[in-house]
Structure formats: C-alpha cells, structure tokens
Amino acid sequence: DYVYLTDDGTWAVRAAIPNGTSVKTGDKVQVETTGGLLKREQNGSVTIELQTPVTVVSSGNDVPVARIQPSAVSRYENALVQVYPCQVQESYIGKNWSGVIGLVTDDAEHGNFDVEVASGASFASVQAPAGSGVVSGIVIGGKIHPRNAADIKIAETGRDSYSVDPYQI
Image 1 (tube, one colour):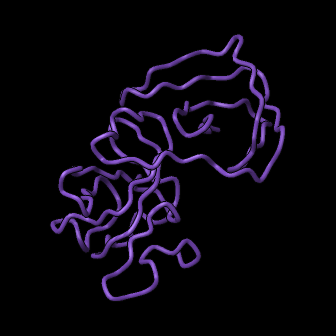
Image 2 (tube, helix red, strand yellow; image 1 turned 120 degrees about the vertical axis):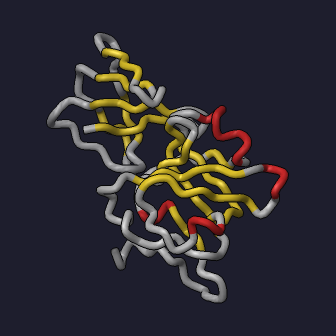
C-alpha cells in the first residue's frame, strides 16, 4: 500500500508501507526510516519503501493543505495543495476527468494548471463542468492529482450543488 506522509502541508513524501499496516486519512503516524529504500519514480516524485510497520499515534486529525496559486505548483512537488478559485478551461468542459484536464484561476495573472485523474478512479468518467470552485490534490510531476472525488468541488453555473459528489459516484 502507498500513503502520503506530510508535516504541515509544506511537503509530503509517498511511502510504501509494509503489509499488515493500516492507516487512514487523518491518522498521525510515527515511522522508522532506518533501512528504508528511496526510489525516484519516472514522473520525478520520490517514494520511500519503509521496512518497519507504521505506528498510528492518533486518528481523526485534520489533514494540512497548502493553499497556493497555480504559478507555485512546481514548488510544492509531493505536497497536498488547494487552488481556489478556479474553473475548467473552456476546451475541457464536458470531457471526462480521466486523464489531464486544464484549469484556470479567476485571476489570469496567476496562470493555468493541470489536473490529472487516473482512468481507474471512481470519478474518472464524470464530466468536467462549467463553473467555479476549488481543486485539491497531491502535486506529482507538476500536475495536481486529486485523491478522490471530494477533492474536486467545482459548481455548475447557476446551481448551488457541486458537479462531483462522492456520495453519488
């Protein structure tokens, strides 16, 4: 299993944890890195393969998120980030989230950014909506990778609800 370990939202590292170790989002953990193996993935991210079980110290903690401008994405590699406000670029509206989708901020000064969703994700076949909202995820290879459907909260124009609802997928 793979998890992302982070401190206060300023950095994160992808960790391969030994079989039999169970952790959930919001768990505060203690890890032993002695004997761990660092691997650089093809996309440039780093993974540490831990050799000893992870100890859960507490559960139900808030997960720290760095709120950033798209122009800063490259400085947050492997970190959990959030961009707000943003919207889907016009050429991507109505396309499935699967693959790479371009987004823009409401402030053109801060530029565009890409969101990448794995084709096997439970929300990959949901269509990218028009409207504005917030996107969160882990930065990998300069793109934001949402962890789940709840990380994409872009409201349909003229509606009060979000187009991606994790309870309906």
